[in-house]
Figure 1 (tube, rainbow, N blue to C red):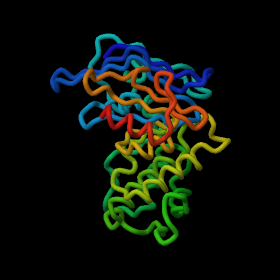
Figure 2 (cartoon, rainbow, N blue to C red):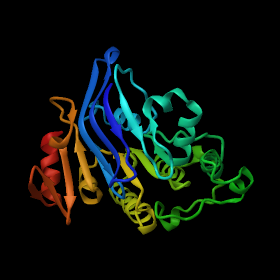
Figure 3 (cartoon, rainbow, N blue to C red):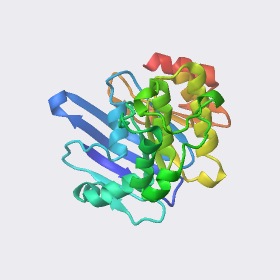
Figure 4 (cartoon, one colour):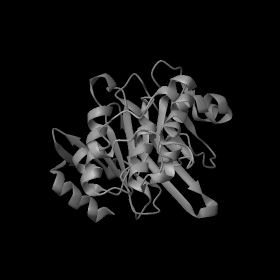
Length: 280
């Protein structure tokens, strides 16, 4: 893995990546990122065919995974924190884990709930680990209503995790990821188990709740296969060039004024979806 990753709190970006190479020789896998930017107050989407490295890239950006590397210059600049390098964070587990718990939020393809704990206690684990609330206070809190569930789906919080459907667990996992109001939110297929209407409900909630005015410095990085919703709600889309296993400005669509732009060409949402279908 070679390259430079910069998160700059003094710019419009949370994450800027230049010349990054992720490789796993034992898996015959490599992914090159020429340039990628995660802007504050935006939802950035990673698209690609199965096996192209979307989740791997998400995990590297979120400090979940550390591929083998020969050279790497990575610097993190989050609000009110001194800069940290990638190497420093990976050599200091305590510092790295504190940053991940308090500043980052994660939702993986699997919910990773403790099956025999109640929904409320599963979510409270995240609250306590983030340092946001005490264990006593967390245990007193019920599962608050939010826009991820319809009225007839509201939970008391006393249900066991294994009693919830796959789609319910997925939205509860997103509730858990949002509970401590993370500065950076990393989502891997957050609507993979949901029907179209419920998936749209989730995207609307993310845009409405995560990006209201007081959260202007938040960012979402999301892996999804749903091109239609990505084009409807996303602000920036990077697709992985399946022929070259590359990500860069040549694989980036940006939304400005309600239109998508790629290489200077403007597209509406339907045209953007059609274009992306040709790239997958």
